[in-house]
Length: 185
Image 1: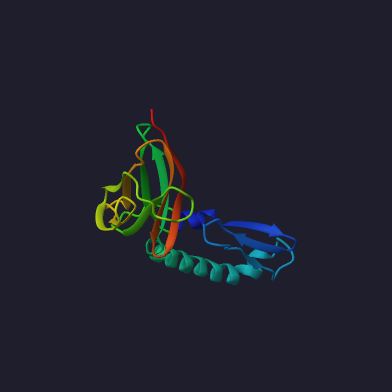
Image 2: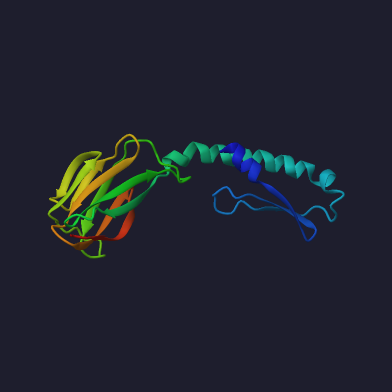
């Protein structure tokens, strides 16, 4: 990751100043140096600034590498099994850089029959990948521990064709699947 971000840094001449910008996924890493007026004297005038910037960029990258696994978020994807109102919800724990987090993580998940964050009991809503830690509401809400790949898969059975919404939370942040339409033949 360090090499990728350093490689992605670009030097751009902008109206008598140099903007050093990078697309590192960190809010806005643009730094503008305005100590020169011509391209010819850029190297002499800004060498000290460029050295300082290089040190600052490396320090920032080191911090990002250190904490990215500590800032986790979730993705939730619902899928219809096209069989009698059944489906699955796959919950993936990600790190701050968007990579799958290969750790076991405690996740709270629940299902509802309206887009209102309410837990509604279905015929079945249960952990099929990961470990059930606590059943909060039968067939509606669970605390689950992800597998070693940071994945929890929930089995969904609405008892027939229906629309459901699945939510999952980690550290107070809630991720939603959006509407999952379950069909029945």
